[in-house]
Length: 140
Picture 1: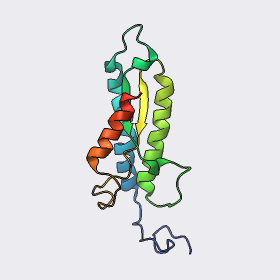
Picture 2: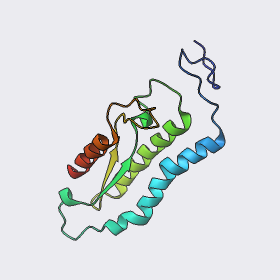
Picture 3: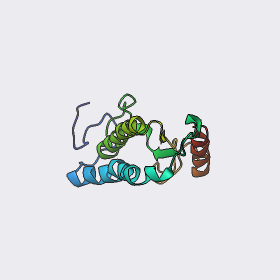
């Protein structure tokens, strides 16, 4: 099948809507810029006490998505969401370097959750997702 940016031929997948600049900017503001602004303004408030062992650092956890993985992108599409989550992953990698010794930066993937975003087709419900993410944070 041919490739078309308007989604008219996508190998049997439903057509994707044309992505606009506004779609891209909105996704980046919410998924990439927002978490960075929160980090810049609030991470210092987490406060690490002098002498705190590395294992007890404050944790700044950010919700990402497997969709943001460049390596794992085998399905294409979802340009705005996918690229904004990929940018978030890169931002958080930089934060983890910049905040080393002050806070642990943790990216959390919620799993394939039964929500409106997945059309209810997820494998787990929201409660199970949150419980899993909390376990991951507590293990950090």
